[in-house]
Image 1 (tube, rainbow, N blue to C red):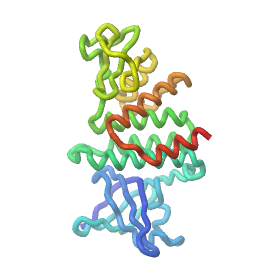
Image 2: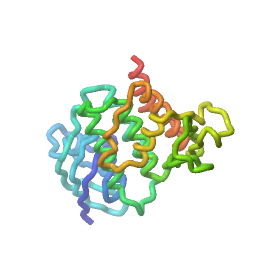
Image 3: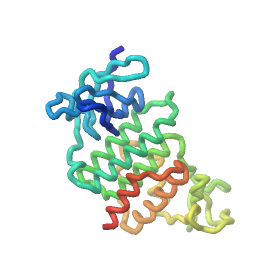
Image 4: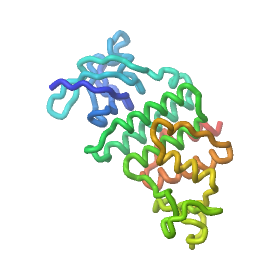
Length: 253
């Protein structure tokens, strides 16, 4: 059976002397592992289209549960990501997070919106149009929102108040409380939010994809935003990623 789909390479592994496996996140079938015969040869006609982060049209043959590359046509290589170690590390984290979450995603839903999120994030990361930590926060929080882990940020979960002089976000429960209804104490898993931070979180999780990246924040707000999305991702995915640890390490240098 021959299948044609658009997809982006989010992983690759050596297979034999000249072959390789690639993990392709497709808009039609989710993540599929494709065998690329001769894919490691320098003169391979599929070398660019099957490189990490390349977005291409793939024609694959399905034999049983296995996929084999028939042909490919490249759309975008995102080549410049490979020229900056910090960008490469962050893009690798995005790919690892995507692979881990999408494999447990409801396959009855469309993958197209998540693919668009990933491709747009790679584009803005490559072009230096947004602060790198802002892209990290946007991708993390929106990806979790798209796979069903969207927090309730519309208003206080007790009285439905849309805003207060201080709001409190329960990271573990994904719930928002106004200051009047909040009876706990702020700490690692419950964070007080000022108006700017809450507005940014609402924009990331709820806005239309076409305006998702139309967001600008101050350095102070970005630091708070990154802390929240970092903790939210860890709390709900419950897994550490080596690519994220590496990104943080080189960012501190």
